[in-house]
Amino acid sequence: MQVSVEKTSQIGRRLTISIPAADVQSEINQRMNQVLRNKKIDGFRPGKVPKHMVQQKYGEEIRHEAIGKIIEKSLPLILQQEALAPAGKPEIEQVLNVNEENKDLTYIVGFEIFPEFTLPDFSTLQVEQYQADILESDVDKAIDNLCNQLATFAPVEREAKDGDRLIIDYTSLLNGKKYENSSNQDVSIELGAHTFIDGFEAGLVGAKANETRELSLIFPSEWRMEKLAGKPVSFTVTIKSVSEKKLAELDESFAKKIGADNSDLASIRSKVRANLEKQVSHLVLEKTKKQALDKLLEKTEIQLPAALVQNEVALLHEDLHRKMGDKAHDTCNHHGLEEDASRRVALSLLLREIVKLEKLTPDKEKIRKKILEIAKAYGNAEFIENMYYESEELLSGVQNTVLVDQAIDLILAKATITLKPITVEALFKHDV
Image (cartoon, rainbow, N blue to C red; front, side, top):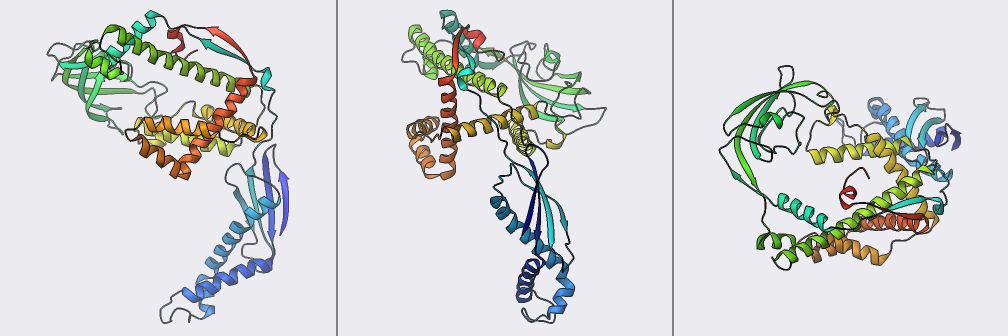
């Protein structure tokens, strides 16, 4: 085989591969013999069909199948020979001399390789680590939030107000016509929670059970379904019930639900504080890790393979729809997915390089703790734990997670960390 390698960009490569005509004919002959042994044609038993009849009827198909097989077998060998690792599936750009029996077969394939880059000195990374002291007022707010989360709802016959839960049916029209997912039944909605488009919940304030309301609204300009974004829509909403929220009381039931030892206020506050400390500690660590990775990205020049980015966009797209339960995949407009995908790909390449250069291997004790942590979230922890150890795929996923954690720990161990005081309330906001 003759091979030429062309550099089309910093990470782009194009291979031109020529296969001798004799090798092509040999593959065609093998395929022809298979067909002669197995193909049935009326009037002939399998294996007894004249070759000229098979050639006449299936010759072109056989030739194309043989060429496909040649490319399938030769390309991995060439990539290994040339020490090229494609980042994504190589694309066949052109196949020459497909129907020329006495000429060499030539095919051209393009792809991107994994980029080469230089990691920065981790000690040059300046990372801020938040420091949040938990005050009694923070415990008070946490208890209030739990009372709200554990609240119950009781039906009322008065007009609906903010905080009430409504069960509704609705239909909607766009330019007077129905559209995909334009109606739903038995939908639970809490007024004031802002889970529907602007104006929807406000339009139901003052409504009573068995009342029907007409709402004329506008979809947000960045709505997930692009064909609806910024468009006027009319809703017909039937209120089936109105229920009033009753905050949970600090009693034995409340204490049991949060895992407190006793139902007295001191025990409840102690448990809430302990849980809050765990949340704060976890959040501080996650935000510190994110900031360290952001600093690492800022200091590293890396060209991202388009195929990897597009694959990640597709994964994010599917994940988003799975969470939203939205079937309208092709009509959705997901702003920011490509930016998120690019960040993920860049971090994946950076962390992979750190693992390789530092010769990191998954820490067995950390793997054990990670699996135990996952197993405890289920009822039958022992069964889940055994399942992870017995499944190569599940165990590999945990090992990769542990390797990422070890790589980030290495970065943080060398980076310059400065403490930054912050309130617990501010820590829990997304903009810090």
